[in-house]
Image (cartoon, helix red, strand yellow):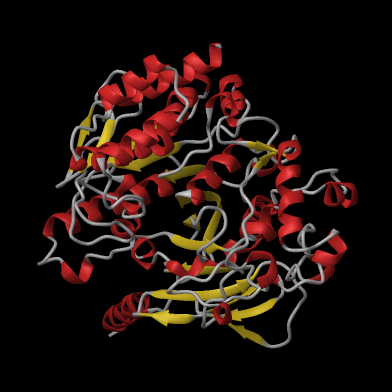
Length: 511
């Protein structure tokens, strides 16, 4: 009888363990918070404030700790979008300056589970988009906690000003959006264990400008120790000879012009203005991280050359048809005008024409897309990989998404591969419900997700059972994992074109 009782008790314990719900209520800085059930295996917290809203006099100032709330905060709906220009899918009534929230998706059933954590930083040219675009439930179902964070972007996140520098305890201005990300990562370090997470196993990942933010975080001494690994999807902030980067000093003229356009004479006056007047349609300020000697000590290229960065394992990827979001058609005449207006010396104009030919309209279209891909994504990705391989100790993995699909995020017609942002479809499980229609895409999606989650679980190694062996990056070898109807290792894609771009940068540096 006792043996029978023990067997029944064991069966009850197993059944209870199998049916136990994930953590639907927990405690964070600020108070109790409650999520919602997604399926029967995920708890989703869509909007948890990680700071006090930087409104009014707190605009363009360091973040403050969130004030405690009464009762239980129900995190059932994502927060409003950051103030930004309107688009077809985003209107002003969907925006609010009170937008600094994060989401947590956890499969953990106990605060003692110690699951690895993947923290996503969204793209949008440092000026647009929203943390709630995807909460990465598909990745979470593979055994990780996913967090998506919002930050100040656009003019509210990156404004550079002498007035702001004078009032700042650090003597610097700009980079508020990056400081927000660092603040959120510190919040995660202190609170993620209450969702069943392991603060020692935090991997940051981002797409486009979000990937560039990841690169900046890898380079910033202020982010040291806040994550163990990094994944970059279509974005690197490494540029040679400071091309494409800005400093506090060279942004001051931009700020002066911006203030004239919005008819503002001081920061005090701008703190009283509505956010829409500062960030809306027709208002432009080149918002981006700046080299300030504090958040970013100097150009990332220099920092990586000297080995002065947060040396963590990285996985760096870009897509085969990045430029398909920018051009739908390009004529021969238009292409020639662009090439001749770039200011290249004649020998480099000839070299560009050789590697990116433009004899027909279709050839011009593909060449313009490829040129944009290689200058903005291909060369920066491999510059990052090469520099860290040379000066760092942590492993570097490089990937190339080339899967062609009818399905896309932003791309225009006549595509030859994966466009900018299409990687988000593969990592978010966008093909799960249409596997019969998109079998190859579904296969690539599953493979990529497994690699990404393995990388996060191990803090730096994507390999796992049933997957093609992925070797660390080593220039001149077949070490780039190409995702295209499956996965296989290839040599550097578009090698001759990348080398052409690299030679030009070297030429300009030596002048």
